[in-house]
Image (cartoon, rainbow, N blue to C red; front, side):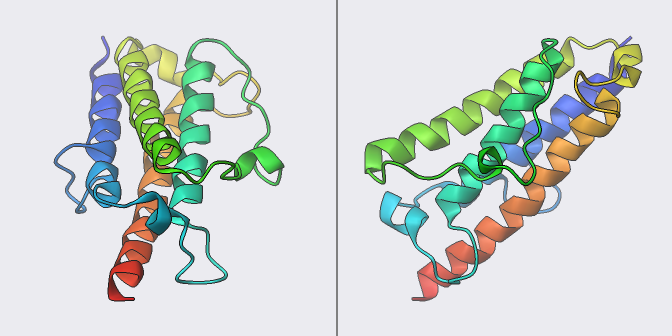
Length: 158
């Protein structure tokens, strides 16, 4: 049985593109943002929207890879934690957004295949289980979604 796995996949989809209880999903938050806006720093000490998108994506990707048996690398406190924007073109921004949502959907599909018992398995390369990781990915994505919402408002006000 995988009823809890299905609920986690549903929550992930709601965070990224669905009808989320908390407010706008990530897809709505980044909709209409140009590459120039995504690179903007309305709060000089904060990350840009683009950097946040890349940061969320790296965590979604390594979580997906962990569901495939790949050991999760250490990200926190490394250069991989906050990938740099190396191409600030409109095409690169569209690619970054598309990749984020494609990776989120790949992760959701992988979660759906989990038997609920697998949620208690230890994540390769981590001391915690998949239940903790996958709920954490939803929470982490929404946390940074809130930052994107604030930056978007600041950019619109400027």
